[in-house]
Length: 345
Image: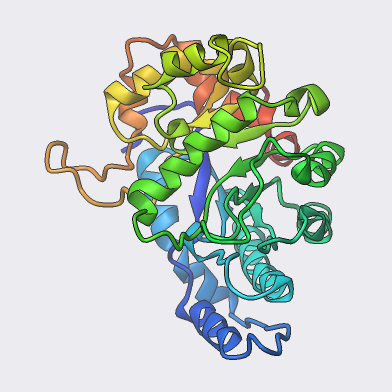
């Protein structure tokens, strides 16, 4: 049964249970990489509704009011094919997310996959971003910081002006982005175990040492998985900022205040450290259900991603802090979500 009566907005959900017909579209696309063409996915509303019953049941059981829903991160596949392949695949995925949101508008809001492609400017993403936000009613986007999966052509760091066209359009649209990696081609990096977390950590380091938030003061970026190892290495970053190792003189604690973090961390001690280091106003509830942490923890009998009780029982948070983390911060960071939901911030 739900452990709380307050609204809970989960900002981190992927369609990992998509019908197998989606994978079949991808297989067909991969056989035509030399001559890409637009693919179509035709699923009935009943098929799509059946595919999200697990999410809906988990939301009811855990007391989650609303879920921000995006395509499966590992399958964004930006490293495969050219920019046409990425565009056509992104459109198929985003249209499927839109179908879910149309069927269950009270439970889901869309977050789009961008058609990123190795060596191609983020300018190529703007048309699809516009379509998803302005036509499909999505409230945010996911941004892969390692488009090629760790092989040449390497992706410029998030601090580089190469990314500025995307930041500019996000500010114009008043939408945030979650920095979420996709697949890696580096043999030494396990996708879920190290690649995602390493990219989260690197994103914080690069953004905090940059002038991105001087140039785009209203840009809102969310780093998932609690920022990787950043809370644990907080003073390492403070030392780097003060020791002349980075091209900035801004104290880390000031620089990092521009970023937001989710709670996809999965243990109480680490969550408390996240709350203490980053502050409850910069943390949004996100569990990434049906993802990495869907296994059952033998110590609790619950899945690892069932983290609401840990936050509810945290001794470092006030009741107001918990409201911020569970729903108020989401409405501040995702203003288009606030317009969709009848909740006051």
